[in-house]
Image 1 (spheres, rainbow, N blue to C red):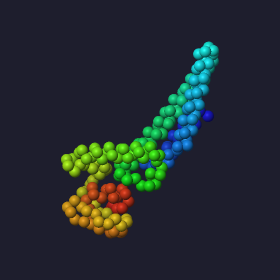
Image 2 (tube, helix red, strand yellow):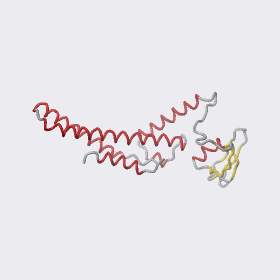
Image 3 (cartoon, rainbow, N blue to C red):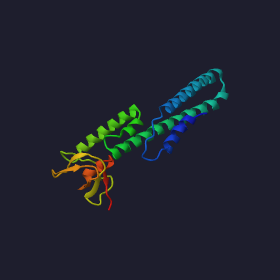
Image 4 (tube, helix red, strand yellow):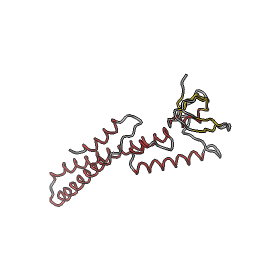
Length: 196
């Protein structure tokens, strides 16, 4: 049927929970593009026949195929755009290094786009806040306090705080550290925020 494969791509994204990235459906996308090519070729031959033979009875069929082409295009663009929005959100959530499980779900072009976005964001952050730059990925929610209590979930090693002191992050150790230094490690699963 017309546009079934394209609608399946949209349903696939709709079924995935928010913040999750389903595997890139290269096969489904290829099938949609093949259907679009076939519809376009059929329309071209019918348009030529309608012009040369004066067959006005083909016009409704041509219009129907054209609408199907437009719908397939909209669904394909919506699928790709939604995936890019999710990938962009992953950069803010996980930082500049994505877990392997997420990278496995991305196409090579999406990984290239992620790397370009990562570089652009880093360049922008370096341009802010003087010599050191400003990390705008920190404090995604306004902090209630500047220091938080954290528990280390895995051995990480030495961790240097801004005042020059070093803290040894060993599994199950608890520390009272600046929030902005810990947020990235919390997102990466190294630290856990202890709520009192």
